Length: 129
Image (cartoon, rainbow, N blue to C red):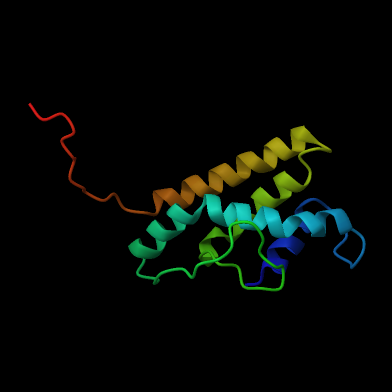
């Protein structure tokens, strides 16, 4: 899936037109917001990939991801990315609606986290007595 597909889906969620030039401001900000989403969710994506034997993700920029490149996270993360992008695109114009989309993003990420099994790890003894 391309980053542009996530951007287009976010526009549809916002009931915005998906034609060239109709949302220049959104299109300019989207590559930065998608990169931020990928950076924020990278640990969860790594754990999800490990739990489901999907292989390691490739390294991508944490600042800018071109809309015409592949979405670097697992496909399972697309719904969360769409909701996050929608929330961030309208945060200055409609904070109430932005908050609703951010809540949907948070719920989607929580569902993903519930699909990752717990891992038993050793506890490091920092206070040796």
